[in-house]
Length: 135
Length: 197
Image (tube, rainbow over all chains, first blue to last red; front, side):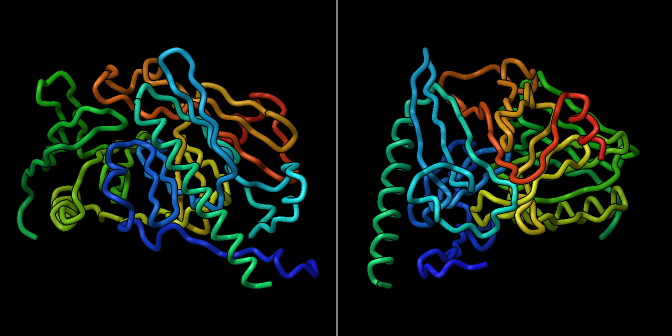
């Protein structure tokens, strides 16, 4: 059944139409933030795997010895997030990637972290504007 | 088309290694070695079962499914090498070079599926990523609907080269899946059963 809430409609998004559109930097096997396509690309066993910023919930950065850890949490059903819980999902019964953790001694990881936060902020702002317009 | 022949490709990576080498596709099989000849891989053509071409992080990959059930991966091909590789594969090994499209939609939902020694995450009918089970150090049920998978780190798995300080890797440490509905994973034995399906 559908809720009567007009806003609670899943809005389709897509990072790339085809794999040839992935940015060149992915060949370094590092995390890439593609601002233009609002996407974070993660190296997963040799593949460059895009995650659209709309799937991202938050990112945590921690330091442990020589390593910096980045934990990326994704939006999934079943997360107690208060009022956001009415967020719609395309397929709530699918399997979801809920979180990934990377570690590195790469000093650029802090910059990547900062870019992710910035992209998330920009995307959230755009989404808020869109909602305002549709009201 | 023409006669069977040998051809070399430079700057090709074998498996998850970080040292490029030269791959030679000869009628009798393949050979790959790093410039210092410290790492050498040879596989006889008789072992080849299936050849695939796909977009990976390091450009394009030639994946060779072997008759023993394993797969050999060679990364670093340019897109425009496809025709040359396809022709060699056809003439030398009498095989079709299949192209495999991956999902780049950017979604975090799909379907997990065990295929051989890999766990696939498929979005629609395309794979978004693969987890070789050989790279899994540990997995557990974090709670009723969550599965946590921890990965081998390079120094443990023995598959990658010594870590270079100049080019530190971004190492995937763990991944957590949310599996709604009925998930029955009680112990490791049961997980093994799942793998065999």
